[in-house]
Image (cartoon, rainbow, N blue to C red; front, side):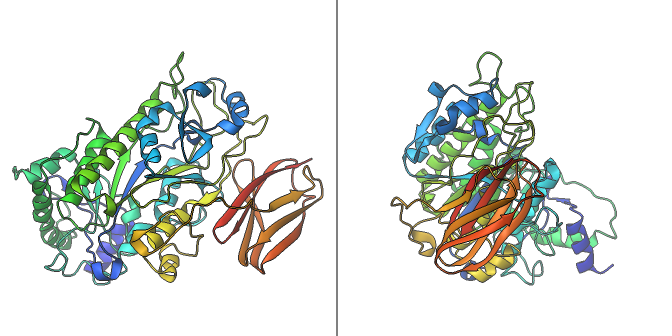
Length: 516
């Protein structure tokens, strides 16, 4: 087997060899700073398990419907926190530290993020989020890995070198995130155990691991010897920073503390991935007798305190202008709670962005809750998660539009998530006029007319059922500026609730319709 083909097959199969004393290195990439932007860093926090968005951000403008759908887990309205960005949202009381960041203009909310035809398997949906694929397609490379491979066509030959001494991306955790898989090779370095990091920077000897299949892995050992050189630059970066802000003694906080140390220590690594697990809250999501406590509350508090401590540390080190932090979870939870004080696998959920250059606002409206939600009813998608990724690549890393579409496998809506500085994008947060998008009659029977005010260019209308599955896209074309309409034949649609999502340029809107 040729070496190149062997590594390619290894990457496709997700094999992560272990090198350097318990530090798993799933290969390395290296950044060409001139081609890929300046010193901007993206820190990605995976909230593994499927975060319950409806108990994270509570729709106070529909509180009675929310409470009716979640009688046994609804957070009392008088316990909710508020943020200046919206008076329609109540924040879970465990997110007190994060609300402070919103008060300082350092936080952004993107409502109801998901993808068409959601898959409710943890493994498959996580794979979709990491690869940025359609739900009916299987892609081997990750979105961040594809981006990082743009200026490294010869990788891994000759890496690291004098001009490119630092890892391209770092995962704090034992398994390299699929997002960092390049078209051929993994583009990241995984630090299995935060304790090992401190042993490394203290230059404490660590036992090496042995491996089998020596003949087949001979080339991997050669790569390992090559990539072990990264231990030196990591050690140097870690040893430069000795005075950090205080962090809680929790897993996520400890991971972010390492990330801050490495960034402040001088590494030019572009991506850092960290994780907090436990969000699969089918039962005991809340504490019986006090719904403001329980598993979900504890997880949100850990997230909130870790992000706050990380932000303060970045400010103390003088590097906050360089760092953008983003959260994601593989899916949300159903609208109705279950009988076990929990929630079941659902569709869309909110994402957060934190940093000095975020456009600190709420993107989208509160999810539309039905009067009498059924067991399988889901929060409808407002934003495709790939629009968020594409916008970060364009507005944080300054990647041109054509290359963004190549990385994301097709074009996606650009969102003004970042303002000022990085790529010259200037966003204004003046009040915007009401978006014209309506459907009539509603309720409807055999025909439905939709109207929308196009700003010119591509207009897109999707139809979703109550489970979040896309059942059609009746509008997908360029339209001139002005009022437009389309008539849908709906006689074959089953009776029930549907959602229409319209998108044109930076605008989108979701409305609820009923078939009788």
